Amino acid sequence: MPAHLTAPEPQAPAASHDTYVLGNDAVELDRLRLQHDLWRPLLQAALGRAALSPGERAIDLGAGPGFVALDLARIVGPTGQVLALEQNPAYVRHGQQLAQDADLGQLEMRCHDLLRDPVPAGPFDLVWCRWLAMFLPEVEPLLDPLPLCLARGGRVLFHEYVHWDTFGLHPHGHAMARFSRAVQRSFRQAGGDPDISRRLPSLLAARGFEIEELLPLPVLGRAGEWPARWLEMFVTLYGSRLQALGLWSPEEAETARLEMAASRADPGSFWVGPTILEVRARRT
Ligand SMILES: C[S@@+](CC[C@H](N)C(=O)[O-])C[C@H]1O[C@@H](n2cnc3c(N)ncnc32)[C@H](O)[C@@H]1O
Image (tube, rainbow, N blue to C red; front, side):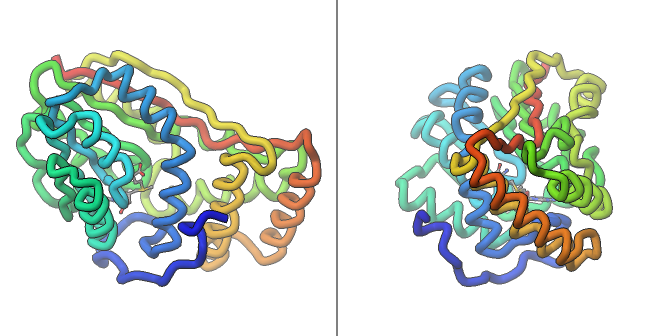
């Protein structure tokens, strides 16, 4: 197991108005790192399709611990600029350290609540947003300022889920199907929408954006492969949270554990993750 997946020390919680249901401790930071590593090729392909180029200015909304912001900063180079906005101070500090260690002076990581604080004026050439809109109780404060902070011709690029129901373990995953429903219920109870991408293109079109790309991005992995490790980690970590919320039971967790063990012993077994929709739109 890589060093960054060993049990880390818990860190200070974020501000009390935090609506991020998955939590803010160091274990979640490591889960996000693994998740980022897994989805990185799809991120890089998306940035290629969006033609992010040296010298451009990009803004990362809900940047987490700064993993994507680092990639953005490397692409725009020293003549460009990346502003990464994140509400969790511990994640902001983590991103600042990454930027310092990599000597990327073009990357600024800033503590910012996207539901309350005014979005910086820019103008930016690219707005990047992944796995944020799905957690917000209202998306208008996120979307309304976009035309104002983008340069004319600038683009927004979202990677949010469109079909959480594709999550599953096959052919063993009966408890896993119930887990998926419980996860989605927890997101909705916290005010989010796990399938927010179903609404995003229409909401962007209503704000004057030209929709350039709608691309579903599935992820699938056999036992032992990256997606399986990521999804097993999610079931184990978030399963405890679901139990605390009363949405999942110790018996269900044990059945899920047995299903995952059966899957590891079956070379034909495979996981499918929730499907992302890439949404790219341009300010006309
Ligand atoms: C699932 S993580 C995704 C992180 C990053 N976008 C990525 O792709 O790896 C969601 C992040 O959104 C942040 N977040 C949630 N609500 C926010 C808000 N109102 N303002 C700023 N950040 C927020 C959370 O703190 C968390 O770091």
